[in-house]
Length: 96
Image 1 (cartoon, one colour):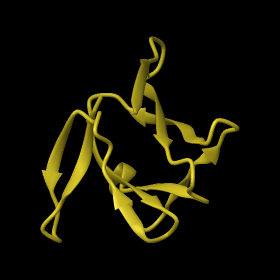
Image 2 (cartoon, helix red, strand yellow):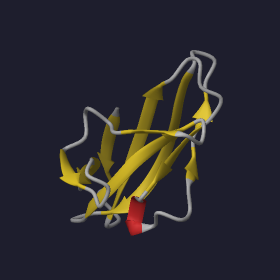
Image 3 (cartoon, rainbow, N blue to C red):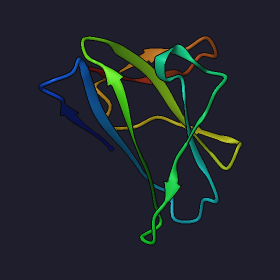
Image 4 (tube, rainbow, N blue to C red):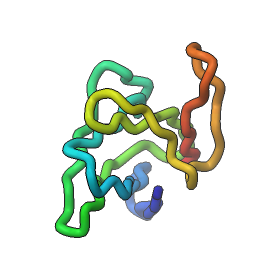
């Protein structure tokens, strides 16, 4: 799930990413700001949900994908749209 909060005083948007992955040990986001090499590590909550809040520039698009337990790639079904990737699949896209 993706929740956007636009800041009035800055050209940023706070974006909260959430994933329900009860049995998972770790969830990371890759691709934000076009950086597929540096993962954003999400925190696991008591509910079993993983989440993190990230500030991203307004008026930009960001492709991303979740990496669950270092071996399973998943898209966010609530992203703004999907974009084809180089591997025959797709990436989630968030538009700010």
